[in-house]
Image 1 (cartoon, rainbow, N blue to C red):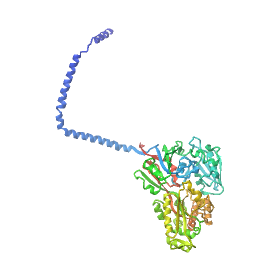
Image 2: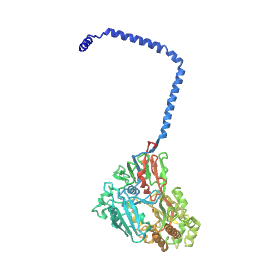
Image 3: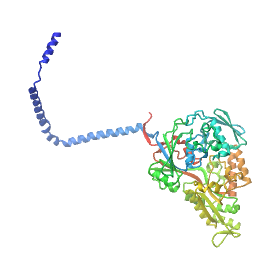
Image 4: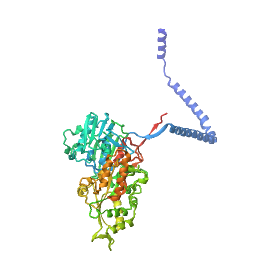
Length: 601
């Protein structure tokens, strides 16, 4: 066997490559290939041209079959795929400022309120129906006498720095609210006692029954561990005001200054540990603007996905193909507050005359046809339960009746068309704050009052301008005859702070200086009424007394207008908002853009 292999290998070594023979064979292959090409391709091309019509038809038929198969594929694809909101991404919104602090206890502008809602938790919060619901609270119980409320917190809430939120944080925050030296925007905690009963339990004790107490539990909670050793009067100036730590759906990252002095950007990121649900957005940006021009430029350049707090005139300039406008009423009213201590308006007859001389329908049309009527100290949300027969109603527009009341009160028209009494003209100083809607309303009622012989001097103040010191120079001294101003009622119809005579003080909110023993008694007793039916009856009785005394004229229910990009999802346009920033309550459900997903079988 080995010998055979050796012989075979020797024969293989003796093989030689014959180059001439190889070339000869290659030429033969070339000759045969050319001959076949001429015979079967070139010579038969003429036959192909003869049947080209049939070829084209067949090609078209094959193309149609391929196209039909593609269409069938796309059609079938729709049956198992669907467009859904995209996860992640950045939502940016232009909101009016300025921003002086990011500490929610001192929030006083729309931008500051938005940060407060997005970054911080509350014990209770208002849901999309306008009613109170649990936020940081797991359980809330009240005693039979209505004086003690026991709050049990959730145990799964963490601050953005990783610390756990507990009763110490709530106790610390309540301590700030109770101490006047803190100077917070939240009031009414002076006579409420809070005691820690456990790691996650707090007990609140009231001195007297106060049915709306639960609405007071909507304050933002601050982290006690960050303010350890800080005096209450130093809380506002603490570094926390520029770098807040909350426990809400979004965490603060950066306050960015820009080249424009009128614009800043607040950067927030999703809190993946949020106890309700991880936000669908990855980032939330707030473009803080101080004027309409900044907002308009941001919308025009797609720098933002939306903008809030817009006037009607501004919405007319929005490109309809890119933005929709959401108009939502809030639980607040815009009033002409009549200073009852004014020399002229202390006369009830004059106040009633102005009431009859004000055409609120025309005011609403001028401000925007989308604003609801509000002639009472409440919205329909608060006393809608009253049957129509007993429901209080403001007097109808009747300039003739207004003139009669003024004539009887001794205010007679002179040759200049201005009413005078004892040589003194019927002149009213009317003040409002800088706001496109307010200014239009002011212009409208000034014209209506002038038509019955009232001389009206108007003044518009920029409340955001610290040099004009609106609060100190106008509100506290009541430096006006009439103030056109918005009063926020909230989710509960308790309007004690706005109309009880005890609040007609410099730091009080009774800006009309209204004083009525009957009204005071109704307001006080309504606070202690336990049943909803009794409370509704009390508030209806107060509304009737309020109309009779005419301390103010309800012009319209306040609204908020928001421009929203077409790619934004998750917003509740039909939500009942207690206040404008309540719309951020479910911002963790908002989305930007769409994605294609497979349907679940």
